[in-house]
Image (cartoon, rainbow, N blue to C red; front, side, top):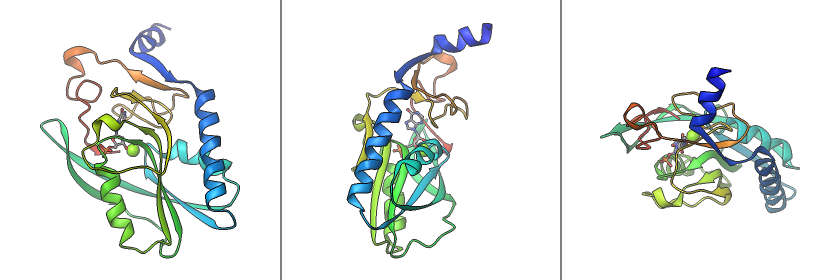
Length: 198
Ligand code: IMP
Ligand code: MG
């Protein structure tokens, strides 16, 4: 109980599960319309996108296949350096497929910028981006998503797949994790610096 009360003090619900569900349904209908009669291949960016991908895939009324890719980025001065490295490549060849890259959040755009460059070289039939969240204020690399769930302000969020130090991914709502002064500084919410696997 004590832990639960402490946790709820750190978290503020930003997007409720019902709103997420409705928006994911709407994105899936858009994708279904855009690719009518075709097959789509979802590529989820581990690990943050896995819950979004699971829900999205089940709402798309088409022949759907999916795969996962994993990348890491290295922090320089506690900010993402923009250096992205492939940790786990795709299992399935994407040549000739309608690929939709599925990401939890589009922040600086460095991750998706890198992945677009890598995947484009493999000659998919089409290549689009679906991002549950978009923080346009933070963009460094001008990447635009084709399907965006919600535009959010520049705050550090967790839940529905998004983590802070690997915790909170299982929250059903997207919540703002309030910075806690010195203790958190440089580790996520305070500076938004990230490193390691997504
Ligand atoms: P980008 O390369 O800066 O666009 O980084 C995108 C990645 O950073 C996402 O896939 C997340 O893993 C992480 N990220 C960015 N903002 C947040 C946030 O507010 N909460 C949790 N993770 C975040
Ligand atoms: Mg991610």
